[in-house]
Structures are given as structure tokens and as C-alpha cells.
Image (cartoon, rainbow, N blue to C red; front, top):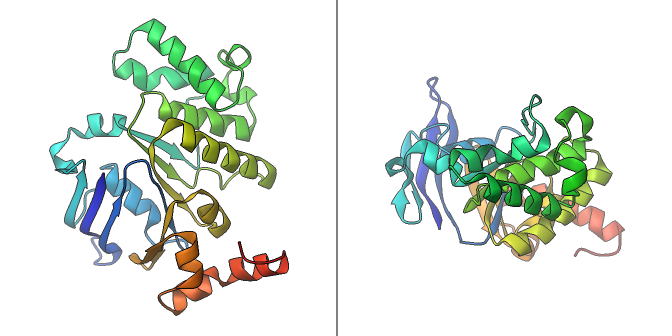
Length: 251
């Protein structure tokens, strides 16, 4: 569904943010990018969303170069969830979720139904939350609204850039469980960025490990744990192995 073909992005000073990225994301897959800070994870999402343009290479979406799409139309087909959430504080919950459907010129009744449907999917009662202002919500509730807003226009692809990293551990674990459940219900293709290996292994169908702007290994959880391709990958996953051995075995 999505193909990166030898994608690079170079800053004016000559430093590469990402270099020679070649990988694919299958339809309905949750593909997780993980790596240390500054390795190029967020840059990769911005390249796909056309917030920045590659220096070299091609990105295909449904077999078509993304440069061929109107960038605003493309972004409406990609739901986007950020760590900062970026909800509009002057709008209530219903108004925030309605933004993309309104841009797509859906009729009012369809939008109202969609808002209620999505609030139920993210486990918030529509009658209790539709008219609430964003400032009245907890961090976890705001992030649920962020997910609902990203899904509102029925996008084909959901882009999630460290969406749970600012939350406390209890809310974070609950939202991870909820996303895993939701993923099975909505059948969307997801590109998820995180720096948390536990989160990557829990959510990802496949995981891509990045280092210094390069994608050094792609695999399932078991493939990465059992067959790391180099010392960096082995060291990167060692803390996960150690923690799970202490807790009763790697799983």
C-alpha cells in the first residue's frame, strides 16, 4: 500500500535526517518505527504526509507517487495523531472531531453520527463528552479525542507520532490496549512512531529499527529478538530481554 523507495532527506548543511529508506507498509498493517531520539522517525512520517519533501527517492501510495496527489487531499486521507495532541481549545469535543468531515463536505447528520460512533469507539460516552471543552478533559481523554479526530474522515492510513509518550504510565497502558482493540475493529493501515520498545512489540505487526537516519532492521517481534542483524540492534533490544527475563521469561 505504501512504498518508500531509496528516500533521503538532507538538510542545507549537508547532514542527512534519513538516508536510503526502502521499505513497504502493507494494507491493514500496523508498522512501527522505533529508534533513539534524532534517528529520523518523525522525519519519515513528515515525508509521507508531504510536510517536507525528500531530497531523493520516491514514495508510492496505492502505486502512485505521492507528488501526484494534491497535498491537502492526501493529508485528509491520512489521519494524524501527535504527541502534543494539538486539539483546538476554542472548540468543543464535537467541533474538534467534525473538522475533517466538514472539509470533506459531509452533511450535518452524517457528521453527528460519525462523532457519536467515534466517541463510543474510543470509550467516551457521546452524551457526556460531545459538548465539553478541551480544557475540561484529562490528558488521557484529550488523546482519545485526538485519535477520534484523526479517524473522523474515515482515512485509509493513520499516522501516529509518539501519541502516548506524554501520558502517565496508567493512561499510557490503557490507551495502548484500547488502540490494539481498535486496530482490529477499524482495519486501518497504521504507521506508528515510538521510542518505547515494549510499546512497539505490543502494537506492531512489524517493527523497523532506525539508527542515524537509516533503517537497520525490519521484522516481527520474534525475528528481532531472535535474529538481530548487528550489535546496535542487539544492544537496543537487550534491556527488553533483561526486563522480561527478570519478570519470568522473554515473551
